[in-house]
Amino acid sequence: MPELPEVETIRENLRTGRSGNPSILGKTIHKARVLWSRTLATPSLEKFQALIPGQTIVEIQRRGKYLVFQLSRDFLLIHLRMSGDLLVEPARAPLHKHHRLTLTLLDASKKLRLAFNDPRKFGRVWLVSDPDEVLAPLGPEPLGSEFTAQYLYQNLIARRRQLKPLLMDQTFLAGLGNIYTDEALHLAGLHPLTRSNTITEAGTKRLWEAIRHVLLEGMRYNGASIDWVFRGGDFQNHFRVYDRKGKNCYTCGSPIQRIVVGQRGTYLCPQCQVLLIGD
DNA sequence: ATAAACGCCTGACGGC
DNA sequence: TGCCGTCAGGCGTTTA
Image 1 (cartoon, rainbow, N blue to C red):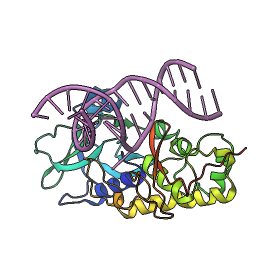
Image 2: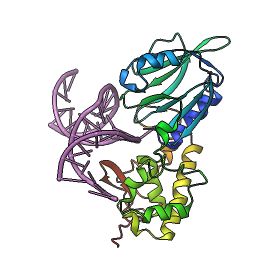
Image 3: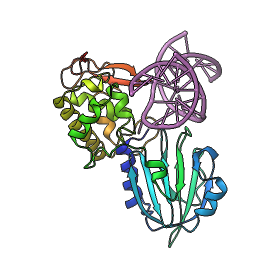
């Protein structure tokens, strides 16, 4: 579900507070409850419940699609996968059916609860002393200084993969998912099945700009809110191709096509994104 | 090296 | 109304 812009939106809301709830920065964790055991990737339940109490939330970072909670001693990493979300609620509120892990937080005035809600149970939580134990395999941040058009070109031509699955490979680039990849490829005028080694420098430049553009646009609209997981974003009203099968391309008017690439629904404009057979 | 198939899960939706 | 197939913002493992 959430891709980089949605994760960034959640991070910002947790840091600054939202809808009546305060920021969770500076709060101390009192108790951990794990309601679906597989949600906890590491360590064991016993160690987790022993290590968490007393640790303060110092800062919240993001790396790719991971949320990285810097605690006073350890790091708490959360990946929301397809359907996860993080909610701040009163500690005494009834437990929602889909809550998988909760942390009660001590506030000066009242008790709060940070709840990991995840209907499909794909999300995972790690408590580690070094975040690189989990994050090391990730590729660069698409909005970071390391990710230049030249870097992208060199790495695209070094492989012979289909563009879309390669862009969604988190070890190649960290943060793009199904929606933003389709949006970026359309904006760049590239077919998702294009072989990465056949791309031109000009095509790479368009792709690099498109990736950054759609991510920044997504963040500007606080991410996309689709399906039953509503988080207040608005980017779903600005999709150019995603979920627009049969509707007209805003650029050329052709009907948007839906194909399957790498087992994922893929939307493209057949007029704007022509597959060039090369190499 | 690359990619397909499948598993992990619940829920919404459309067709009959 | 109920049943069934399909689909869903992700990713790890196995197989080809």
